[in-house]
Image (cartoon, rainbow, N blue to C red; front, top):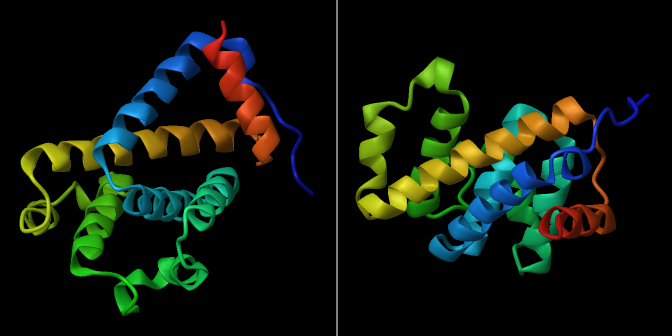
Length: 160
């Protein structure tokens, strides 16, 4: 049985949500949409955030991502469906998400350099931190994904 939602951040502290959404918009301007959603889904899988998994899988599919790539994401290290560039980004995302285990290793960081500029690496790092923030908010809030509710929350945060 699912827990009832505990809180609604967009209603309780809309300014904070507005700032988080502004960061999302900044990241979206800097990183490829397909890669960004793969990373967001992956972090959400690691963290067990059903809300964010559903939301980002929905967005990725609507944008043209292949369902089989999303389905194979938990086993991305063994799947041929991802490019070397995506693998480098997924490695970094995994290590930033599991920071207490991997400490964002030099090997993972250096693995980004053939594919991403220094500035892009900072954006990838910010994306990794932000999706982990959203995961923690969604999980602790016990909120369930509904596309209409997400749009309403965005509007509430934008207009307060």
